[in-house]
Image (cartoon, rainbow, N blue to C red; front, side, top):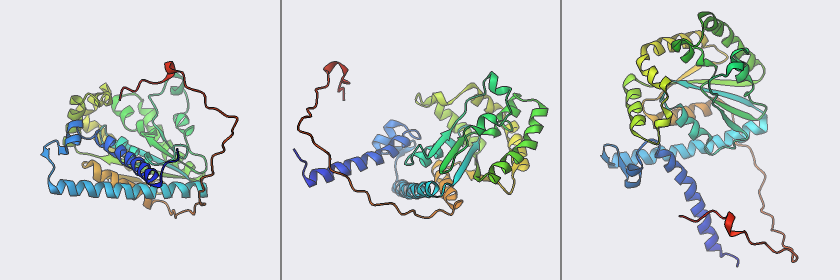
Length: 307
């Protein structure tokens, strides 16, 4: 049976609604499931201003994500190469903005590199070696969820590197980045800045949310105790690695939603992208053959329809 035009349009609208529901799923990471379902904030029912702010946030997010799609097409068409570093304290919101940037992009064009702690073999390599293997080819964007700046931050504060390795990092990092830029890679570095009080509240939220407890590691908890040590390490890092070829950009991230919008808006401003003309897409008719008969799927391999 051939579906009617009205049925087809309805299905298209439902599919579009499903894509918007993905945003609600991401929202559940910021607020409790019950609050999202009931239209409540943590403090109670949403005020009219809350609703207007939320609508404005989503309008801007969808608009900026549309621009990111245009940027992606331009990157592919021009063979541009982009590396974006996201650094900041634990719970600063790096993962949230990365999700919003990549959500509607092609993972073959825009991918995320989130490297675990180095293994025994990697510890004997040139420090930048394991990061270099993730660098982009032409027409690719790579987002580093933490980067080689681990040495200037957590490794320094937690004593995972020697004083000599620490100093060598500051000698090598600017040269490494200049080399990347000379090779044709655009390097953009973001530091997400939050207050002591805001990190404390976000850690408490993770402790009391079973869906977020996996985000807390013993290292994260130790970072709370060493807040001032991390602050000193950050200040030294920004001072010694803020270079003209790859400057640091600080994102004020106490307000998560504003931080996401501001970061994406700024990222778009860093590249002279234009809308790339796309060829018209025509859906070809499906071929049908009289000698083909679809075989039934065995019941034992069908996933039970519990929902």
